[in-house]
Image 1 (spheres, helix red, strand yellow):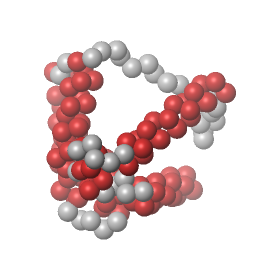
Image 2 (cartoon, one colour; image 1 turned 90 degrees about the vertical axis):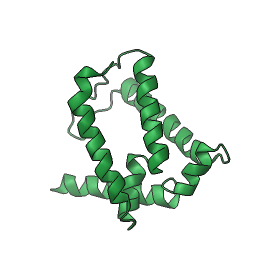
Image 3 (cartoon, rainbow, N blue to C red; image 1 turned 135 degrees about the vertical axis):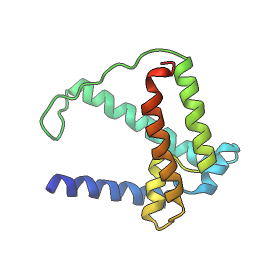
Length: 138
């Protein structure tokens, strides 16, 4: 129960950070897709840089999980087509909805209830991917 509370607290802090940094703002995302502002690129670039540093630190210093287990990174399959098609579909969904998964739940937590429509259809899309996964090029 304490772990669930801990993860919930981390999620709330993440949501507050996203909301206060305006990463969940539709207007900031719109600016990004029109290449009018560096704001979102700075946030994404900072997250990418931090992620690289943390993953390399985990690998180099053999840092263990909260459960005292080894953290293993499974190599991704290489390819261009699968990542290109997946990236285009994700980007189109992001551009149409005005939010990717993190900001969707941040907006819901901030009280923007119309985002429930986007969350509902993203869950349907995820379910459809699971059904069609074996028939798609990977």
